[in-house]
Length: 127
Image (cartoon, rainbow, N blue to C red; front, side, top):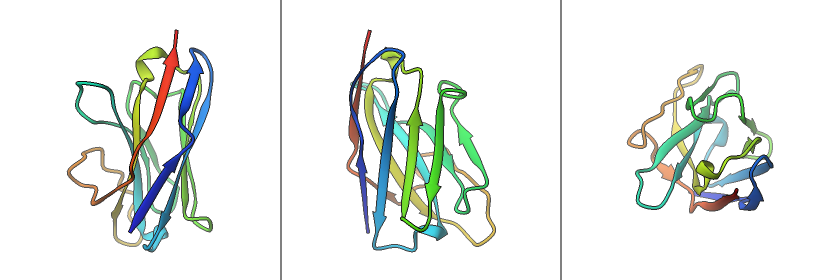
């Protein structure tokens, strides 16, 4: 099982970035997908997630209205579109996956629920 996150980089405040997370070795369409981030000396925190079918998304209050999560099950890829970036968005961003039953729209926000994690991609927002 592999999750490969990409798309991070350095951007000015107010700018945008799109992260991608490509999955392999799993039935991607059976997984709920989450995005998390971890800033230096802080705990990993939930950013947002998307249900296995893509019909339900759930976001942390800190990113609601600025970030959009989508998925393409045909490409085994989940995306995190980040707009209106702020310096406080600076962190390493991780994608994560967890199997859920067919028909589930559940999007967990706890790190303990997700079984599979990508390696992380650095996002730095300059002021």
